[in-house]
Each structure stands twice: as structure tokens, then as C-alpha cells.
Amino acid sequence: MSNVQVAVVTGSNKGIGLAIVRALCKQFPGDVYLTSRDPGRGQAAVAQLQQEGLRPLFHQLDIDDVQSIRALRDFLKEKYGGLNVLVNNAGIAFKVHDTTPFAVQAEVTLKTNFFGTRNVCTELLPLMKPYGRVVNVSSMVSSSALGGCSQELQQKFRSDTITEDELVQLMTKFVEDTKKSVHEKEGWPNTAYGVSKIGVTVLSRIQARLLNEKRKGDHILLNACCPGWVRTDMAGPKATKSPDEGAETPVYLALLPSSADAPHGQFVSNKTVRPW
Ligand code: NAP
Image (cartoon, rainbow, N blue to C red; front, top):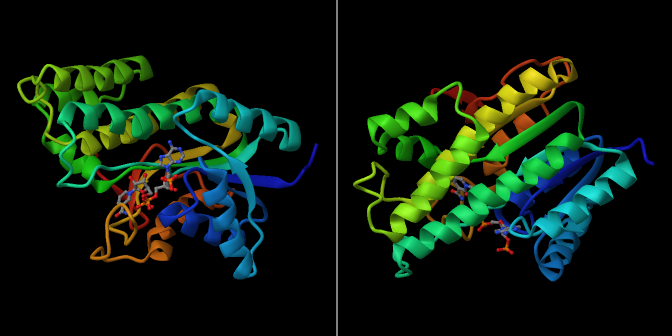
């Protein structure tokens, strides 16, 4: 088993994830895994970074597929005995003018952004080594979508005692409510992406709390963040930040020094803790 430190970035064959891998290759003192659901796209991205003189490693990972997540988990366990840095970056968004029925958009978006991210956490968080860093890429849209929720839902999502099971039930209810066309009546905002990212931010708050309860002495820091509005296939060419600029806050959180005890369980944008 190798003593080398190891970092993993999900959904990193392009966009912000690729830029996070680029920055980690330059700054992280260990192996950096570029992961992609499609090995061809992943290897092409590795080749691109190699042309820049960097040395990322590759592993397949589809966060919608639990077998794929477990294969990565077993590989990390066997080769490194755990994990030092995990960046949950993979995500999807339907375009504004997409005519796919809203209930389908809700199911598909929640499946990857919330349930896929949660499954990665379920399998990989137990592998985190002392002083590990976990970054869940959410969005400012999670805050605006929270503001669009009913008072009752807002209270639940801001609660310091909400459990992961309760959050899963709420995310599942959103999808069911869209199928019955009652989601607005039930207090949800009209954004599947926004609700999925509420899920990511609240999940991060819960996971940080659990780390405090179960692994306090291990100094693991876990946060959610917004990369900003970034020029990628998801956000389009009019966005204000380059992918490398979008990577700055996630990379800052991934590389918090071992002396740091904060931020933890926070929602961070532009390297600054934001109120939730
Ligand atoms: P992007 O260019 O569309 O890249 C998304 C990445 O996620 C791609 O590598 C994609 O792989 C991967 N992915 C999607 N579903 C996956 C799955 N099931 N398993 C593994 N990988 C999967 O988007 P981006 O703008 O870089 O977004 C990265 C993250 O930042 C997302 O979580 C997004 O919500 C968040 N974000 C972006 C912005 C922005 O302005 N761009 C703002 C706030 C938050 P494929 O190539 O195979 O599709």
C-alpha cells in the first residue's frame, strides 16, 4: 500500500472539474485522480493536461452508478488505504429553454446532483484520512432557491438537527410532487437544479455535523461551495469567470492547511463563508 497522498475530483473531464484537477496537479503534494464516467473523454482530458506538463492519473467514475463508485472505493482502499481530498464536482443542469417535462428534469437532475453526490459520500467519506478535505460543489442558486421555498421548508433546510434520512425524504418528495404537479402548492421553488443544490448544501451541513460527532479528533474539514458563474458547457460563454478562476474556491477548500479548523460545514463562495 502506498503512503502517497491522494486526491479525487468527480466529473473532471471538462469544465470546472478539469480546472480543479489542473490546479491540484500544481499544488497538491500527492496523486491527483481525474475521473470521468466516459473513459474516452477522461483519457482525452488527461492527455490535454499532460501536454501542459502535468501528471494526473485516471479512474472511471459515474456517480449515477453505485457499482462504479464502489469500484473506485475499493481501488483507493487497496492502493492508498484511504483518501486525503475529495471534490464532489460532477453535476448536470438542463438548459433554460429545454422542453423536457419539468417532472423528468426534476428526477434526472436530482438523481445526479443530489442522490449521486450522496452515494459518493456514503462510499468514500469513511475512507477519509485524518486532516482530509471534502468539497461539495453546490451553487449560489441553492441560496436563491432556498429563499423561494415556503417558510416551513426553509426552516427544515436551515435546521441544525435535520438528519440525512429526513433530507433524502424531502428530496424524494420534491420529485414526487413535480410528478403530481403539486410542487409549487407544496412550497417548492420552480427550479429542479436549485432544489438539487439545496440538497447538496444541506447534505454538507449534515455531514460536517456527523464528522464533529464521530471523528472530531481527525480534523477533517468538509464544506459546500459555489465556484461562481463560470464559462463551461453548463453555463455558456457569457459567464464571467474562466474555468481556472471557477476552480479557485473549491481548490482553496481542498487545500486548507492542516493547522486550519475552519471553515467546516459552511457554504463558501469567493473564499468567503456565506450565510445559509
Ligand atoms: P460541465 O462543464 O457541464 O461539466 C460537468 C462535469 O460533470 C462533466 O465532466 C460531466 O461529464 C460530469 N458529470 C455529469 N454527470 C456525471 C455523472 N453521472 N458521473 C460523473 N460525472 C458526471 O459543468 P461545470 O460548469 O464545469 O460544472 C461543474 C460543477 O459546478 C457542477 O456541479 C455545477 O452544478 C457547478 N456549478 C457550475 C456553475 C457554472 O457557472 N458553470 C455555477 C455554479 C455551480 P460528461 O462530460 O460525461 O457529461
